[in-house]
Image (tube, rainbow, N blue to C red; front, side, top):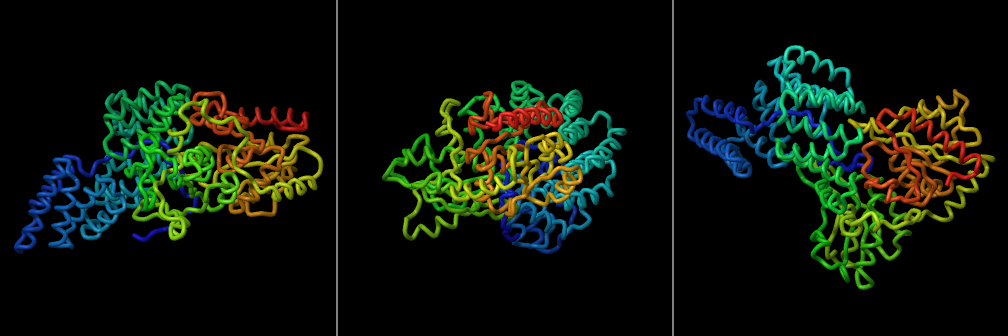
Length: 598
């Protein structure tokens, strides 16, 4: 599988995902089936008999939970006969259970090619493809399996999960409803029905379905975990934490365990239990999470608990998405101070942010990173450090940017009271102030309203453009488009309604130096918590941010400690767009009357 370079808009911090997918390729029933298949063939060639013995040994290892040994025995069998489809299937199971999802995917594909009529392989491959985000492939494989076994609960359930992840919510509900009519006591189906509703932001209804699943099976860990993710935005973070703690022992795979631990970390941060929550957040790098990032750096990982940084050469590697880098980059100055005059800090960030970070931390050396997807895994490289090694020497250590939080933000009080920390280009700020003056009198308001990435449950964090009308029509406010991506339809819709929104003559996605300067020059920037509003906040611009009911960044306070100067408008529920837009309109009317927004 070749490496694919990723844009930062494709890379996001791992967030707790709804758990509906079911099935275990290494379950006792699955292994019994494989054992039966191994007992069936008539082998007349000595080499084939040897391969068979290796595969039987592999299954024994799988039964004992030793997937490394099982994988080695399967490889031994494939060295004898690389056309053995069962060997590839067994190898795929072992690689999947070891968290090597890219290799597992390749092995399942090889098995299916050699065993085209073996529906169990199609089911296992479809489930793994869904977990890795290959939704169209997963759908085809699961439909193939269901053609042979139409009433299969697991496959029907997993197909509904695929349809849900494609945002085909009506199809997902109909798929589940049809089988629930036959299997009304299936906790698996009720649970997945709940995930379809939770992905759409209807947490109240979702909670009802998760509780129905738990009524049928109180030990069902997936449903308890999902109920936790519904309870938190409904205002019951403590109850959600209780559910997570109860669900963790029942996690069926390393992936589920890691995802549940991620949710637990965010709940701890929501409850203000820091640095416990920040330390638990290390699970974001767990290789069992498909979205987890691996960093390719020729240096050991720095442990702030045991190693003094004074005099050391430390590489801080930005991770996840652009917004995350701006949130977590607030601790870089602390690392520079700890390294001292004899040390040196190198910072790897998204290339479009290099200038902003370099001006903020002039004593550091700042460069860009890049990411590729290899065998289904995101790997981050730091080319500028490799180039500098000839003159600057190797790094003594490296650390992921977010891991600085546990070291330097042990309490809410340790967050500095400051108005941003990144530094926009002063000449560009002056230029954009002059350009804004040309628009005439009125409060100049920059607008963001959606993310470039709206896959899966992310869509529930954003509103349709139509709902912004009360803000757009505020008398005395001049609207400036800061929304990157193709928003021509939205702007045409506003124009048709008599609302003029000025779009600056720059690339709003790539010209982040100009976007940062323009954000600082505007009287106000408003929008949901995406890269653009984080950029405005990070450069000290007057920013109003719309936050979700499950946003952990408050850390149990009444403000965002990361950006203490920013004003926040919190939605009471995922569907509370009308209420929050009305509050913003009221605040904007007041700002127009005062002639300023801060």
